[in-house]
Image 1 (cartoon, one colour):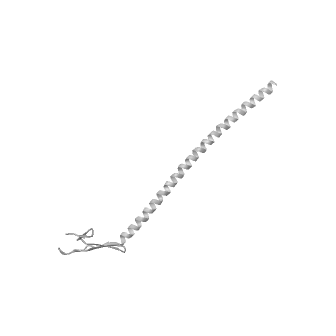
Image 2: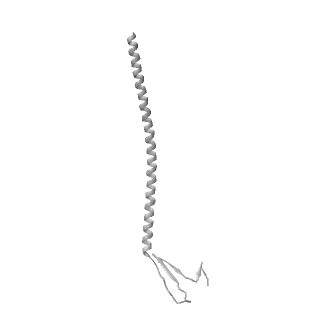
Length: 111
C-alpha cells in the first residue's frame, strides 16, 4: 500500500507539472495571438493610409499633367500702341479667350 501511495503521488505531481506547463504554453499562445491581431490591425491601417496617399498622388499627377497640357495650349498676346489709344489685350487658353480692356474696371469705365 505504501508503494502504491508513493506511485500515485508521483503520478499526481507529474500530471500537475504537465498541467502547469500546458497552462503556461496556452498563456503564451494567447498572448502571441493578441500581439499578432494588434500587428494585423496596425498593418491594415497602414496599408489603407498608403493606398489613400497613392490615390492622392495619382490625382495630383493627373491634374498637374492636365494643367501642363493646358498650359502648353495657352498663349497670350502683348500689343504695344501709341500713347492715348485704347488697347484690348486678348489672352487665350485652349478654346477660351479673355479680352482685357484697360479702361474698364469691374465692368465700369474709369480714367
